[in-house]
Amino acid sequence: MKVLVLGSGQLARMMALAGAPLNIEVLAYDVGTGHVVHPLTQQVMLKGLNTAITYANVITAEFEHIPHDILDACEASGKLLPTTTAIKAGGDRRLEKKLLDRAEVANAKYQLINNRDDLERAIETVGIPMVLKSALGGYDGKGQWRLKSSQDIEPAWQEIETFLTATPDQAIVAEEFVPFDREVSLIGARGKDGSIAIYPLTENIHCNGVLGLSVAQEENQALQDQAESMFRALAGSLNYVGVLAIEFFEVEGKLLVNEIAPRVHNSGHWTQQGAETCQFENHLRAVCGMPLGSMALIRPTAMVNILGEDSLAEAVMTLPQCHLHWYGKEKRPGRKMGHINVCASSSAELKTTLTELAGYLDPAAFPALNQ
Ligand code: ATP
Ligand code: MG
Image 1 (spheres, rainbow, N blue to C red):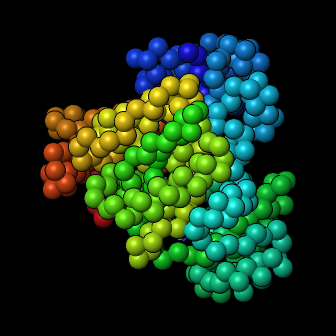
Image 2: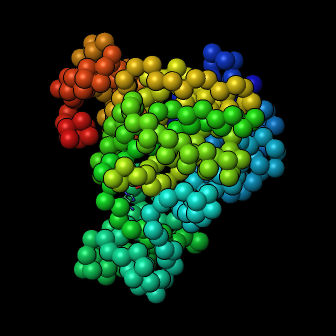
């Protein structure tokens, strides 16, 4: 099988690594250059989207902010999974909110904003504190404003007005600020035959809007059931094929959907060492029409993101249950450069190992480990 991934970052790279043992060849389409590259070496393999579409048996995506003409060309080939509807919903908060409402899954109260009058309406209906998010192009907490009190309205609006004028078709989704107890995510896959397999929930710690630490959750059946029923509603309503991630806010034991990602997800990287079959393999299995692999947790596992660092103390590699994954990317401040999966035989041991690991890392670069 030959799978073309739209996007040539770390997610395509990890799909390539997971696909090799199954004889699945993964190529990556670099949306910026228009070249088809090897996901590990970035070496150019083919030129042009049409050549790649013809070469591939299946086309999928590693991110949702893909120009619509590219998505449409892929969809027209009949090889794209998940469909453009799902990918576009993941890349446009307006479509995403409609999808959540249509599937009747709980989500934060919101109002669309295109102009100043809409903002006034949002202040009345959604209220302050409020989070304002760009409809298009947001990731890692970028393209967001917070209104904590009425004093924040004017300065935020000045920035937002400039922002809206600069980008055609851009809009803002104003959301109530959710006083969450914690953030969790659910990752699952739906096969071509409609079969569904779901990993245990993951607890996520964000710092400055970026994921720092994910910990696979073992024993909250009530919460898992809530999340799974929302997963089934969303995946079913999209006739989804592939891995789908859902981010939630947990408020007093109830889940509200924050957003969806129609792809493998950073909060699922722990599955490489902590689950029977990792999310990358399961995504490939789903889009290639193969049976899904078991998503069972095999041991307590956490994932620590490496942000803006391209080397770590060698001592990290002496910890017997720590697994280092570099992405081969050029160093830039705050950039996702790699991750460390940390495994243990019990939750208590996992905590101890994370503390030991933190001792070898620069606390400023790993704030999520020091909370
Ligand atoms: P990513 O791509 O990393 O998932 P993103 O840019 O798509 O992030 P969100 O997930 O919507 O953006 O927001 C980033 C973080 O901001 C959330 O994980 C959460 O911590 C916080 N946040 C977002 N929306 C709200 C809200 N309505 N109330 C409270 N906190 C929020
Ligand atoms: Mg998010």
